[in-house]
Image (cartoon, rainbow, N blue to C red; front, side, top):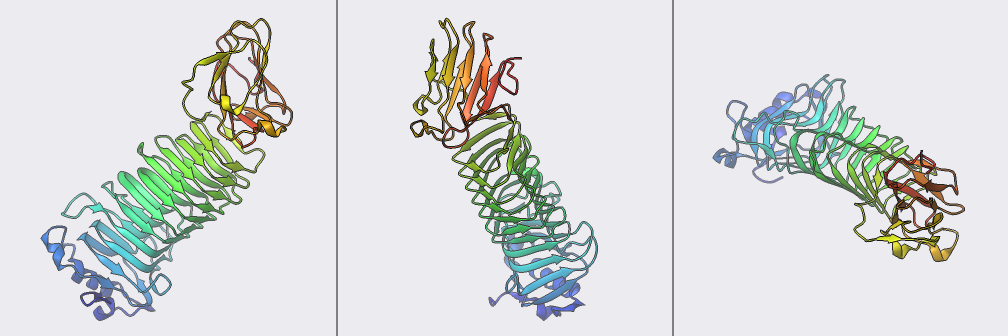
Length: 439
């Protein structure tokens, strides 16, 4: 223990799991950071701050432990398996702040063992005083029970630049990590685990999150970005064993999902309206479902009915020149991104997509082509035996062709899995039905 740290035992806390230690712990916090009526604040008074140390023990509290206008706090225990602070009082949080910045909390177990709307840690600010809500670190902390684990910015003011390192969230009925306003941004969670929560990460409002190396288990929804404030997100190297949804993302976000694995859930992406790139990911049984813009790169989905995407798949329209074909053409990977038309053709033109059956035709996921009906003849796009064309997110007949003879119809198809066995419409202009035939 550093020499200047205040020990809660010196203020009468017992840590015996029976005695109510609320008053003793609050006295230690007030001595270290000032009281509600006379806080040290974020100006020169912060130099009076002292670290607060919890020796190993089980500390029972009945009211929230409060911090007011705190800058540069350090509150720590012996480890999340050694130092526990617990409340058994309904609708009670453990720590509640009103202004907290440049502070560090670590090596603690925070357990809400009671029903109601309590949070293990309610990181909040009402916008007054000399200490805002930003640049706080949580390391090696267990957030257990209650309605929320770590609740950030629910009061509507800030909550930015938060770093969460190797923490554990368990049994939080509403959400493990919660962001609650537009300035709750630049939040990074690295490592750790989220299990048995209503939502593992719930961004009701907020953005600019990085979620890296997290394990998810038995959550109803692992990650829900309800309103991402038009910010960019990175979700990387995560593994989920939850049974339902890995990622649900409504509009206003741009999200990269990289190197993530799903072992048994129903949906990898569900009800997604954001712009999403899925790169080097794997899902054993999940599906993708949404209606915005999706890029799939070097990813694998083992569920044969995995594609339920109804938006565009891929990137922007090609800038390559249109290539006219008057006779049947077998396409190659090198022609990816080209838009073909049938101008000057005198008869039906068939475009044969690369097939998985012939190794010489093997191509990488992301290969795509555009087809424009420029002349009054039939354009037929043929996937080949054993391949599938998915139109508008649904499955056509295996080996079925996409067909149109209406001038002006346009179709793009992208290869979704390495090899060329599955092709999906990434955008459609014209009136193509689910089987690929013009209505």
